[in-house]
Length: 110
Image (cartoon, rainbow, N blue to C red):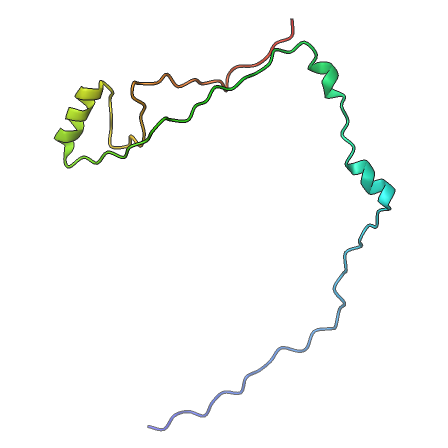
């Protein structure tokens, strides 16, 4: 059986040529650009008398990856460390560290 003749490709009519809109560039004088670097220090008045915040070092002294051959080995490790673990546990501190949650704390003016 012979192959049918190839179809002619019908192209859509050509579009009207339209120049793309070029965004207008704003040109700033050097004096105006310098003003962008000036920092307003209005906030300093609000911070007068505020207590100093010192963040304690929270990095571990040393980190070890522990692999468990089976669930019994993980239960044994739980017993030794005294810390509950699940299959989702990715990290833990020893001795157990109290996680400090501060997202709810806010400063109140007196």
